[in-house]
Structures are given as C-alpha cells and as structure tokens.
Image 1: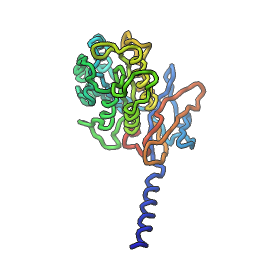
Image 2: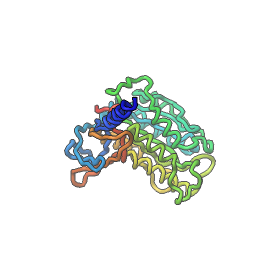
Image 3: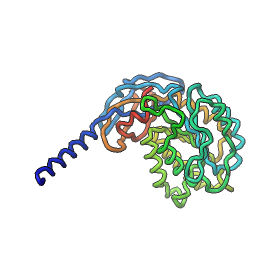
Image 4: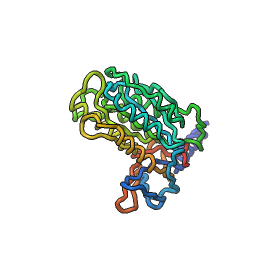
Length: 310
C-alpha cells in the first residue's frame, strides 16, 4: 500500500497538469474606430502569459449572436424618468435577432422585468421608473456578481454551440456603500474586484452609463468620483466602456445608447489557446496602424462554452 500511494499521487499530479494544458479559449474584442472597419485574425496579436500569437480564428458577432442585459439601478431618483422614452426607443429598435434582458438592481440582486427575448417591443414595455429609495440596490456590484454568475437562459437553447456573446449595460451611480468612505483615497473595493472576476469568468463585457442621482439626494463630489472610478475599473477589466461626462447626469442617454450599440456591432470573438485552472491575463493588440482594440484583461481558459463562435 505504501508503494502504491506515491504512484497514485503521481497519477493525480499528471492528471492535474493535463487539465492545465492549453485549451481553446475565447474573448470578446471590440474595435475602436471612428468609421466601421473589418479585421481578420492576422490583424491581432494576443499575449497570453508572455507568449504572443495570433488568434486561431476571429469572427464578428452578428446581431443574432448577441445578448444584451440592461440593468437599471432601482435606487435612481425619478429624474431618470425623463429618459424612459429614450430607453424604450432604443430597446424597441435593437437589431433583429438580438436578445435583450431588462432588470432592476434591487437589494443585492436583479429583479427581472423581462427575460432575454427577441421581442424588443415587449421588453421595452417592461421599463418603469426606478423605486428611488436610498440604498435599495444595496451595491450595484453585488447585483452584477449575482447576475453574471447565474446568467439567465430561460426560453433559449443553452447548449455550448448556441451560447451568445454577452454584454451588460448598467445605468447606475456606481457607488459602493459597503466599502466605507467614498474618499479618492479609498478606491479599492473587494466587492468591485469580486464583480470583475465574476464577469471575466462569465465572458461578459460590462458597460455602464453613469447617472448621479440616487436616493433622496446627491452624495456630493467625492461619491461622484468614487462611482465613476469603480465603473471605469469594471469596464476596463472586462473589455467594456464606462460612459460619463463630468460629474452630473447626462443631458440625454440617447448618444450613449447609440455609442454602446456601435460598440456591440464592432465586437469580434477571438479564439486562442490558453492554459490554467483559473483566470489568466491576456493583452490583445492591433497590428494595424492607428487602429485600437479593447478586450478583457483576464479570461477563463477553456471558456468556449461561455462565448461560442458564431
């Protein structure tokens, strides 16, 4: 028995190492360009653990290959109500085939208004005024973590071959009330970091539109800075984008909604080999002069079941 034990341990070690070998892995890559462009695999280089290589495949995400989750902070004040028509118009006019989900960030989870559907008019009809109660969202990052860890699949084929590219658009002030002071010196929230890791594991790109008004009053410049800082951290780490201008509310959500839609339409799925048991760092670069790309900072190796190539 004593002789068999080391052999058994060796076998387990070999199995563990085999599981850590390079696996087909995918990431979303968004092109940053003022005019529409088309790229191919040789236009990109992916740095994985200091090893640079081109993607083994690259395909643009079609309208029918995208899932968009619109998550609205239920703590926003009624001033966001003037944007309901813009939101309804945007949801109604999403490209045919795109699946959209409408939910409200409430008490640390997502209160579903409409599951993922291609019936955009029906989803738009579920939009309502936020409750506006102070702290009702608990923390938008609790809500985000819960959502991406349990990505809804009701009503759709959830087999690996039918997984869609995942996008989240949050409308929130981004403040994390559970991380203490909103001082510029206190911008390392464990809850924000957990949300980032959960989003990276799910393969979702997180976008946000900053809306300052929440609860009964505006928390002031420090909170505005803190909220924008956290939202930027999440978007940069997941390959998304945080939309805001100054510390106040946007004059209109319409331009940001259009920018977001443009970003979705210019997103690709890149496939490449990666090894590891958990998240690995990647860096995607463009080989085309003056063309920038955006991607997550970390991905889960072997995540092809999360973001399937269309």
